[in-house]
Amino acid sequence: MRLAKIAGIAGLALLASCSANRGDTTGSIPKTSRPLEQMTQPELAAVSRSVGDRYAKNPKDRNAGLQYATLLRMTGKNAQALAVMRQIAILYPRDREVLAAYGKAQASAGELEQALGTINRAQTPDRPDWKLKSAEGAILDQLGRAEEARAAYRDALDIKPNEPSVLSNLGMSYLLTRDLKTAESYMRSAISQPGADSRVRQNLALVVGLQGRFQEAENIARQELTAEQAEANMTYLRAMLSQDNSWKKLAAKDDGNTN
Image 1: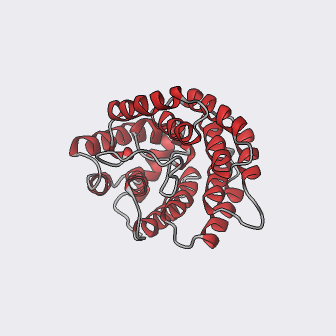
Image 2: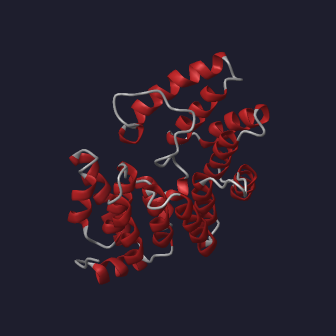
Image 3: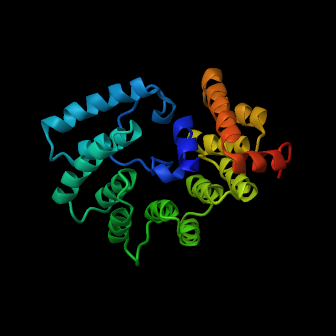
């Protein structure tokens, strides 16, 4: 079972999805009663419809397009998000924020090589953007180029030291190569930073759960999720670990250990 599928179906944040991390405020999503990442899919769909209506009235509205594409990605409509961003990129071909969002939409739709090219075009060597470096790392991880991905994350950290979303992405990079102890170390560093958000903590819960420490993982998850959601995530991870022999062995080996 692929790790991305484990994380994706469990509803936990995974860097490979190129979802919005802290700092990814593309288009300045309208204020809502609670953070988007804590909303249910029906709630996200309602916000998406509202923003989509605004975009439909004026498809040349840059901010509406960015907002709508972000929400579409968050609700799993990756092909539609890509179509929206393709149109916005045609209208604003030199806009770095637009190019960054376009690259993320391409990555979410599986166009990884194209996404990497778009992100690199958005970057400027004389004024490198840490968010673009982090996005580059996420795409490289999906391409299986782990060492290059980690170099990109470290470049991002040189620009923005101790940024929790980048530390979390770096941790997830190690998780993808099944180095769970190193992954947990970076995740714990990430959640200790000011501004660490729900997705960072859910990534830590995933890493801890994959080591078989389900109660600890559930306790971490419950800080952000409802008890039912946290329990559902752990139930799913238990089921996946029991089906995937290599992960089952790794969890058994690490069960009860702490860093």
